[in-house]
Image (tube, rainbow, N blue to C red):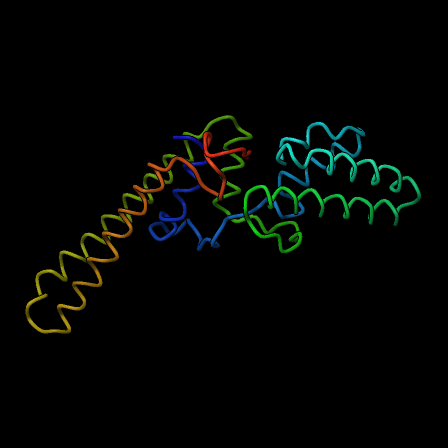
Length: 207
Protein backbone atom coordinates (compact mmCIF):
# COMPACT_ATOMS: atom_id res chain seq x y z
CA UNK A 1 0.00 0.00 0.00
CA UNK A 2 1.58 3.33 -1.05
CA UNK A 3 2.03 6.19 1.41
CA UNK A 4 -0.55 8.28 -0.48
CA UNK A 5 -3.10 5.50 -0.17
CA UNK A 6 -2.36 5.19 3.53
CA UNK A 7 -2.86 8.91 4.09
CA UNK A 8 -6.09 8.71 2.10
CA UNK A 9 -7.31 5.83 4.22
CA UNK A 10 -7.21 8.18 7.20
CA UNK A 11 -10.24 9.99 5.78
CA UNK A 12 -12.38 6.99 6.60
CA UNK A 13 -10.35 5.40 9.34
CA UNK A 14 -10.40 8.64 11.32
CA UNK A 15 -13.94 7.67 12.25
CA UNK A 16 -12.72 4.28 13.48
CA UNK A 17 -9.81 4.73 15.88
CA UNK A 18 -9.28 6.88 18.98
CA UNK A 19 -5.70 7.64 17.95
CA UNK A 20 -6.85 9.20 14.69
CA UNK A 21 -8.14 12.75 14.73
CA UNK A 22 -10.91 14.52 12.82
CA UNK A 23 -9.60 15.38 9.36
CA UNK A 24 -10.05 18.55 7.34
CA UNK A 25 -11.71 18.34 3.96
CA UNK A 26 -8.20 18.09 2.56
CA UNK A 27 -5.29 17.25 4.82
CA UNK A 28 -2.97 19.86 3.42
CA UNK A 29 0.28 20.29 5.28
CA UNK A 30 2.18 21.74 2.38
CA UNK A 31 0.76 25.13 3.39
CA UNK A 32 2.33 25.15 6.85
CA UNK A 33 5.62 26.81 7.76
CA UNK A 34 7.04 23.47 8.86
CA UNK A 35 5.55 21.53 5.95
CA UNK A 36 7.75 19.85 3.33
CA UNK A 37 7.43 22.61 0.72
CA UNK A 38 8.62 25.43 2.98
CA UNK A 39 11.27 23.28 4.65
CA UNK A 40 12.79 22.48 1.28
CA UNK A 41 12.42 26.10 0.17
CA UNK A 42 14.48 27.25 3.16
CA UNK A 43 17.26 24.86 2.27
CA UNK A 44 17.16 25.89 -1.39
CA UNK A 45 17.44 29.59 -0.51
CA UNK A 46 20.47 28.93 1.65
CA UNK A 47 22.12 27.01 -1.20
CA UNK A 48 21.00 29.50 -3.83
CA UNK A 49 19.60 26.80 -6.11
CA UNK A 50 15.87 26.63 -6.99
CA UNK A 51 16.14 23.32 -8.86
CA UNK A 52 14.98 21.05 -6.00
CA UNK A 53 11.82 23.16 -5.68
CA UNK A 54 10.63 22.71 -9.24
CA UNK A 55 9.18 19.30 -8.48
CA UNK A 56 6.56 21.00 -6.29
CA UNK A 57 5.07 22.87 -9.28
CA UNK A 58 3.89 21.99 -12.75
CA UNK A 59 6.16 22.62 -15.73
CA UNK A 60 4.20 25.66 -16.82
CA UNK A 61 5.10 27.44 -13.56
CA UNK A 62 8.81 26.64 -13.44
CA UNK A 63 9.91 30.00 -14.84
CA UNK A 64 7.68 31.87 -12.42
CA UNK A 65 9.28 30.07 -9.50
CA UNK A 66 12.77 30.69 -10.84
CA UNK A 67 12.01 34.39 -11.23
CA UNK A 68 10.59 34.67 -7.72
CA UNK A 69 13.61 32.80 -6.37
CA UNK A 70 16.01 35.18 -8.11
CA UNK A 71 14.17 38.23 -6.73
CA UNK A 72 14.25 36.75 -3.24
CA UNK A 73 18.00 36.13 -3.37
CA UNK A 74 18.57 39.71 -4.51
CA UNK A 75 16.66 41.14 -1.53
CA UNK A 76 17.46 38.81 1.34
CA UNK A 77 21.06 40.00 1.73
CA UNK A 78 19.94 43.55 2.61
CA UNK A 79 19.50 42.86 6.30
CA UNK A 80 17.61 40.59 8.70
CA UNK A 81 14.22 42.24 8.19
CA UNK A 82 14.59 42.25 4.42
CA UNK A 83 15.61 38.59 4.51
CA UNK A 84 12.56 37.66 6.57
CA UNK A 85 10.17 39.53 4.27
CA UNK A 86 11.80 38.21 1.10
CA UNK A 87 11.76 34.63 2.33
CA UNK A 88 8.11 34.85 3.32
CA UNK A 89 7.25 36.31 -0.08
CA UNK A 90 8.92 33.34 -1.74
CA UNK A 91 7.31 30.77 0.56
CA UNK A 92 3.89 32.27 -0.16
CA UNK A 93 4.54 32.27 -3.90
CA UNK A 94 5.82 28.70 -4.01
CA UNK A 95 3.05 27.23 -1.87
CA UNK A 96 0.33 29.18 -3.71
CA UNK A 97 1.52 27.89 -7.07
CA UNK A 98 1.96 24.38 -5.69
CA UNK A 99 -1.63 24.39 -4.40
CA UNK A 100 -2.90 25.72 -7.72
CA UNK A 101 -1.20 22.81 -9.45
CA UNK A 102 -3.14 20.47 -7.18
CA UNK A 103 -6.39 22.22 -8.05
CA UNK A 104 -6.74 23.25 -4.42
CA UNK A 105 -7.38 26.73 -2.96
CA UNK A 106 -4.63 28.63 -1.19
CA UNK A 107 -5.61 30.47 1.97
CA UNK A 108 -2.22 31.57 3.21
CA UNK A 109 0.59 29.91 5.13
CA UNK A 110 -0.33 28.28 8.42
CA UNK A 111 1.90 28.54 11.52
CA UNK A 112 4.30 25.74 12.34
CA UNK A 113 2.85 22.94 14.44
CA UNK A 114 -0.42 22.78 12.49
CA UNK A 115 0.28 19.46 10.78
CA UNK A 116 -2.39 16.92 11.70
CA UNK A 117 -1.13 13.84 13.60
CA UNK A 118 -2.05 11.39 10.81
CA UNK A 119 -0.12 13.38 8.22
CA UNK A 120 2.79 13.80 10.63
CA UNK A 121 2.79 10.02 11.08
CA UNK A 122 2.88 9.56 7.32
CA UNK A 123 5.81 11.98 7.03
CA UNK A 124 7.61 10.11 9.79
CA UNK A 125 7.15 6.84 7.91
CA UNK A 126 8.70 8.43 4.83
CA UNK A 127 11.60 9.79 6.89
CA UNK A 128 12.20 6.39 8.50
CA UNK A 129 11.92 4.58 5.18
CA UNK A 130 9.30 2.12 6.46
CA UNK A 131 5.52 2.19 6.39
CA UNK A 132 5.00 -1.08 8.27
CA UNK A 133 4.18 0.40 11.68
CA UNK A 134 1.86 3.02 10.22
CA UNK A 135 0.03 0.49 8.03
CA UNK A 136 -0.41 -1.88 10.97
CA UNK A 137 -1.74 0.89 13.17
CA UNK A 138 -4.25 1.96 10.54
CA UNK A 139 -5.26 -1.66 9.98
CA UNK A 140 -5.92 -2.20 13.68
CA UNK A 141 -7.89 1.03 13.95
CA UNK A 142 -9.96 0.18 10.87
CA UNK A 143 -10.66 -3.35 12.09
CA UNK A 144 -11.71 -2.07 15.52
CA UNK A 145 -14.03 0.53 14.01
CA UNK A 146 -15.65 -1.84 11.54
CA UNK A 147 -16.29 -4.44 14.21
CA UNK A 148 -17.79 -1.85 16.58
CA UNK A 149 -20.12 -0.48 13.93
CA UNK A 150 -21.08 -3.97 12.81
CA UNK A 151 -21.97 -4.92 16.38
CA UNK A 152 -24.06 -1.76 16.74
CA UNK A 153 -25.79 -2.59 13.46
CA UNK A 154 -26.59 -6.17 14.46
CA UNK A 155 -27.91 -5.04 17.85
CA UNK A 156 -30.18 -2.55 16.11
CA UNK A 157 -31.30 -5.20 13.62
CA UNK A 158 -32.67 -7.35 16.45
CA UNK A 159 -35.17 -4.62 17.34
CA UNK A 160 -35.80 -2.98 13.97
CA UNK A 161 -39.37 -4.26 13.67
CA UNK A 162 -40.46 -3.35 17.19
CA UNK A 163 -41.31 0.26 16.32
CA UNK A 164 -40.77 2.94 13.70
CA UNK A 165 -38.18 4.57 15.95
CA UNK A 166 -36.32 1.29 16.36
CA UNK A 167 -36.43 0.81 12.61
CA UNK A 168 -34.92 4.25 12.06
CA UNK A 169 -32.09 3.45 14.45
CA UNK A 170 -31.40 0.32 12.45
CA UNK A 171 -31.37 2.25 9.18
CA UNK A 172 -29.01 4.84 10.66
CA UNK A 173 -26.63 2.12 11.87
CA UNK A 174 -26.86 0.40 8.49
CA UNK A 175 -26.02 3.57 6.55
CA UNK A 176 -23.06 4.41 8.79
CA UNK A 177 -21.64 0.90 8.57
CA UNK A 178 -22.02 0.49 4.81
CA UNK A 179 -20.80 3.98 3.98
CA UNK A 180 -17.71 3.57 6.12
CA UNK A 181 -16.82 0.24 4.56
CA UNK A 182 -17.53 1.51 1.04
CA UNK A 183 -15.59 4.71 1.64
CA UNK A 184 -12.56 2.87 2.96
CA UNK A 185 -12.59 0.47 0.03
CA UNK A 186 -13.05 3.33 -2.44
CA UNK A 187 -9.97 5.14 -1.15
CA UNK A 188 -7.86 1.99 -1.27
CA UNK A 189 -9.01 1.21 -4.82
CA UNK A 190 -8.45 4.81 -5.96
CA UNK A 191 -4.83 4.62 -4.89
CA UNK A 192 -4.38 8.30 -4.06
CA UNK A 193 -5.28 11.22 -1.84
CA UNK A 194 -4.76 14.91 -1.16
CA UNK A 195 -6.26 16.07 -4.44
CA UNK A 196 -3.40 14.89 -6.61
CA UNK A 197 -4.07 13.65 -10.08
CA UNK A 198 -3.03 10.12 -10.85
CA UNK A 199 -0.46 9.38 -13.53
CA UNK A 200 -2.17 9.42 -16.87
CA UNK A 201 -4.74 12.02 -15.83
CA UNK A 202 -2.68 14.88 -17.15
CA UNK A 203 0.31 16.65 -15.80
CA UNK A 204 0.61 16.49 -12.06
CA UNK A 205 3.02 16.08 -9.24
CA UNK A 206 2.98 14.39 -5.91
CA UNK A 207 4.26 14.51 -2.38
